[in-house]
Image (tube, rainbow, N blue to C red):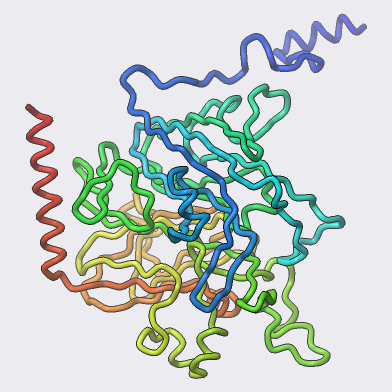
Length: 430
């Protein structure tokens, strides 16, 4: 009987259940080495522990975790460089070789925290292993996924003092791609362990000012590519569920501020998905700090009264093409939205017949968007924020988009970039 059953299984192409997929032909064939002549971008990345300060008022995450370029790791840990989320820019068609180094201190354990709360029956013991998984990019699912699955032989995570190498292929222009660590999703990402790969058009140059740089990990860059109109790019990570302490070391709970005897919450009882603070790019500008200084709600966004917020202040020029790379890497499943006051954009950027929208809704964990706002004719400061004023915006999820008039600096940078591009094209054509 068993021999007959085995014959039926083989006839239908089903594998023997007792065989481990460690030998023989693998079911999914994938390239493990770049083809000859391919462009390979190599990155050395480190995972580090760092007390992340979110604003000038002293709100901070003493257990912050983040990915940084390896050569910047010591400067970031010592506070000599302002930390930002990891941004890797590559071009369509590039192969991406990433070596991830785990620089966590084995003597500094990652603690389990009851807040922000998650409805679990028992505490989830934190781990100290890290990995990288790229959304959309192609890779061998056995040796470079960043996830340990089944009997696959290649270890995908790195413990303290270890390193692991990945090979990915940016086969086409994806724009925004999320980088996720699957070492410990529960205890790592709300402390800041995430990043992004931005896949630019083929042959693109990444400019910082007038200089093209090979590796540009900044939040803002100018992208110039053959056959594509030059554009200014902003990378914005919206994250919530952040565990923040104030400068006195007290746990911040914006959703429960203003409690009185017998009440369960400042705005009705918050559930698990609302707990934790909010921000952009490891920065937050809570109303509480500003109102304590100047208790006028009509001045809460005013830079003349409070100065610019800690959140990114993005700058562009009138009439300039702008693309916003929006990601939500962590941590609560509560949907948010994204608004840029005074602007609209196409819901589907590649579809000329799509509708024009003033707000991007349904932004949840793992979502990415490529937003190209209509070109601004009027210089000034424009507010970008979450669509939820309650808890999101008052917890610090807002910032400023500053549009400048086209002055001498704009014309100088544009002329220098154009001359440099012309010379490079003339040289390479020879």
